[in-house]
Image (cartoon, rainbow, N blue to C red; front, side):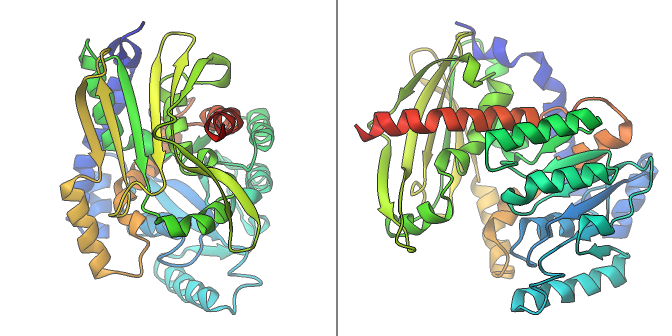
Length: 412
């Protein structure tokens, strides 16, 4: 069996090193005003910025797209300049709703302050031919197949697509094929691929010969009585929703694909598969928690444990590296004590903001920065460490493969 050190290999070194440098630079940038941060960027030879178009913004302080916009407009992503925002609903049918009014007030302010263009549809965009432009799609998953085609036809250089990318493998594969036929790379917003707790565990495994196995633990903070609503709202199921992050890690770093799976061992003692009636009266069968170990045909084993009710303090994620006897050698976790304190302080200052924005703040910056810098450089392929639509397809395929297999095994 391959050791984790051999599997992770030297190819991770550059992305890990660069991520640490980027984190240190962001700390320095935070201490500066936005104009000063831009000046610092110019002094180190990075005056050029990649144009970014955001499609799907959402409500201020609630929508993930809005938080992406906020970070770019405030100069926190040195290589990116947000030029346009496409928001069909709040600039259309939902304009007069209370959240629509909040969005439009913010949009008016940003247009005046930054010159940002706001559009109802992709068709209103005017992307300069030959300009280095990324479109960040952060709308409803069901709209993504149509939106991806529209933005590629509009002439973008690359697409940054929020996970999981599409409702089904078939739709995501069609999107992948269309993008490939047009020569447009598609990057995915799987933030755990660049999160320090994951990087630290990978780095430890790389330099430790005794490392033989990694376990990824993901805990949400639902209460048992909230599960019926959770099952209904996330009807695609846990493996396509909550645990898709871990499946993307498995595809990226451990070579896990449907074709490469040799064996799946469910953890019956840990797992719980339930059929619950949602608020709408319909029944949903899903996992409240699920654990399993995958062995690949190349000899790698990796474990995932996801628990919707596993935390009482907002959720956490852990990476555990063990030896072949199962003895724990290393553990890294997010949030750690320092990040928990920071998130709590920020949430207290702005209780209307979605709490996970504070938790994943640095990860969002890293993903936008490395993708924008990559497009600016003219390099082929994808930024190291960032998931691509190929990884997204593999992760979604594994989710669709595992769901019926684990449901049957754990319902018996």
